[in-house]
Amino acid sequence: MTNFAWFSSTAEFLKELENPEFISSLKGKFRASFKEDPSIELVNSWASEIVFLKKALEGVDGSIVLEYRIPGSGERADVVVISEGAERNAVILEMKGWRKGIEKSPFLYDTDQNPPNQVNPIYQMLNYVGKIRFTSSSGDSFKIDGKVVLYNMDRNDEKEILVFRSEEKRLESYLKALITRPNSNGNGIKFVQSTYKQNKALFEVIKDHYNELREGAMETLAETGFGLYLDQLYVYNRLVEAIEHNEGGQFIIQGGPGSGKTMIAVELLLRSLSMKKQSVLCYRNNRMVESLRKLFASIESGLDGVIKFFSTGRPNNPGVAEMGWQSKLDVAIFDEAQRMTLENIKLAGNAAKTTIFFYDEKQILSTEEYGTSENFSRIYPNAILMKLSGLYRNGLEYGKFVENLLNSNFDSSTLSDYELHSFNDITQMIRELRIRQKNGRTAIVASFTESKGNINDKQSIENIRVGYPLSSNLDLYREKGITIRWLMDPKKDYAPFWVDGQSNNMDKCASVYGSQGFEADYVGLIWGRDLVWRSGRFELGDNCEDSPGGRNSLRRIFMKGKLGDKEAYEKARGLLINRYRILLTRGIKGTFIFCEDPETSTFLQQIMQSAKDINSIF
Image: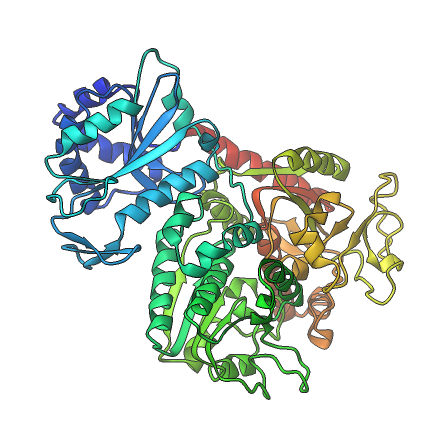
């Protein structure tokens, strides 16, 4: 279990509340479960909440969870009341001890807290309800509902979703209608043991909820499982305010893989278009541009025109962040801005009144990419800096596991909600991926080794990544009877692969350049011989075919490093780690790995098993 305080019945919970050591015991349980001390504010809130809950739960007969950690998330719901009857109901109670609170917007409340602007608790509660409904395995079998409890405030709002001071009996009546216990069905245990299970990928969200995104109806999205996390919400709300008020200037947002950069970028684009602002969303990645253009064109005629390149390298058709770009925009949003050159960064600030950069310098792929914190701050010293701290696409635990793995730090690596496996046989990995197609979309991605690709000759052996023969002469697949080719044409191959679902065929694979910014439910990763485990850390391996960039390509740096250039060695190693960080975080629900280097394969299997064993202890 990943929840620190579960009570099998309301009677048990109320009895525990009479124990004068109850708060102290909660502090100890919290520390043991979440590996950190609860804040003073949280401890004080427990002491205040239980006074209200004693009265509100008197006639309610169900199981109780405090500080319920939503699977795959760092967010915790204050209280969950669970029915043990035949009808599986669960009610989220978002508890607030504010003495003053007025709703300012769907996102913000004006309160007596410091700072006074706090997240709207209605949005927060709907976000939790939606997340459990659509990103948790309990969403399949439980009906989830919720209330916001402002237990130190008198009623000042007619919304039924709110409960105020002295309304304990009102909450009790509501709970009694949903929470029943004719016999114990073990519902509470099943609920707290739920796992992460996200149902939709980014492109599906955009297409299915285009109108809500464009009009900024974020509370509606929250109810359907696509609400923003708190750090995402602060960033989104601040940027919307800047666009609404024509604030101008530069905004620089840092975020890791799966932190929501692209989702927020798309939401901001659609919201700013609804405000009649001249707005564009820009990429260097031509695969992402073509895929988003196709998606947007399918939603609304002409909408694809707002997706632009920030760099084309063609003076007669410059990108938004290149010399020769003529239009002065209201809003220019640059996603994957770590891939910008210094000139791109400088020119981007002149393209629009409000310029927004989303970047992750740990996803830099070449020596020609300069989108780092240092460079952004130096070029725009007066810019507003923000950070997306979470790794939400795959779940926080898996995000931490990947960072620990690549940095050779395994002390705190645990795995529970995310499906991660390493296979000795590629045919077994593909077989397992086909089984997972019943529960979502699959895709294969691969390290840039063994073959370099040939866009001019589709039948070239250089386009075969898995199979026999290979241009590298690796004969690992001689008896496997399978052939998997590189995706090659950005305009023709990538949108069908990632957007239309052709990735399920598993006869093609994407390199890191065709994976950055994309996702699937389950991803099979072919881990190559470029980065291998030796003597306690990842080192350069036997082969690398990563040639984009010409004279500054990873392949050239790799070869220099192998020949004894220590600086080139560490540079190549760092760039390879960035590549595997991207490849390891493309799967929403799971990542399956086949490693072409036997020693690395053995190590990965050991470390995965160790992480799972650590989790089972808790």
